Image (cartoon, rainbow, N blue to C red; front, side):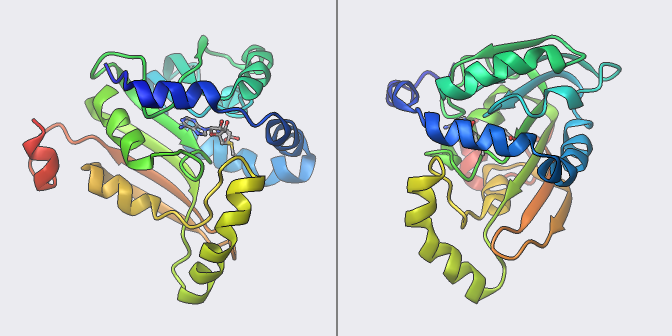
Length: 229
Ligand SMILES: C[S@@+](CC[C@H](N)C(=O)[O-])C[C@H]1O[C@@H](n2cnc3c(N)ncnc32)[C@H](O)[C@@H]1O
């Protein structure tokens, strides 16, 4: 199991109660829901079998799990303030959901447990995104699905430069949020095979819907990942 002590200690100190309150309030507003609900339905609706959701926040995705496809969901979230809100959202789900406090970098699950892993708007704020992706790789079954909705680094140089310049502010005021992360590249470098990617242009916050798999065979993996086996 991934039980790296430094990541567990980090998770214990991770708490942004003010950000959690503002974020969860904002996510309930009609305008914001009109924008995000279809994206959540699109990405979360693909989850199947036994599902892991990382960085579950206030449980914003819980209503979108399809009970005809999903057996149960293990949802992890390191921030206590978010966990309290997520507990309140458990009743909105049509599938069984169990919540635990954990960061994605140290998942309290054995290897190859999950059919699908869901993360929405999470990898911008994870302390060690490469470590988190390696943990997802570990707990996902070969052939399992990775389902991401993330805002990412802009492709245009000028916009990316502005994102870089804003990061000291966004990390401080928005729960460690980095507006400049090349998440798609990190997914590929971990060894996942991207099966579909949809880009939503969004000025300073372009978003990607990524569907990927942990390949069942090791062919095509990066040298580092093959050597890890
Ligand atoms: C912007 S919120 C998104 C919440 C929710 N997933 C959603 O779609 O609305 C980012 C979430 O990632 C969580 N997070 C931050 N660092 C994390 C880590 N290392 N592991 C897992 N989750 C993390 C935060 O606590 C927060 O709940």
